Length: 86
Image (cartoon, one colour):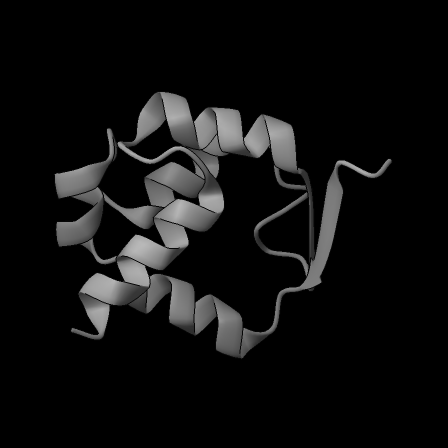
């Protein structure tokens, strides 16, 4: 169970992720047209609509590695944040 991550998925976090993962970012750096497509294709989160996100770090990082130019979810978040707030 040490591989699993559980975080509060507040409205503030949802808004931030939607902001940094713009359609432009997603089309440039991933195999998806938008963040919504990425979320629904990942299928590794308990639910993107729930108040808590629970996921296997290994499985989710592998999904990110296979469908984006990043090695992990953390790398993807950092890159999107840097790009959004340059």
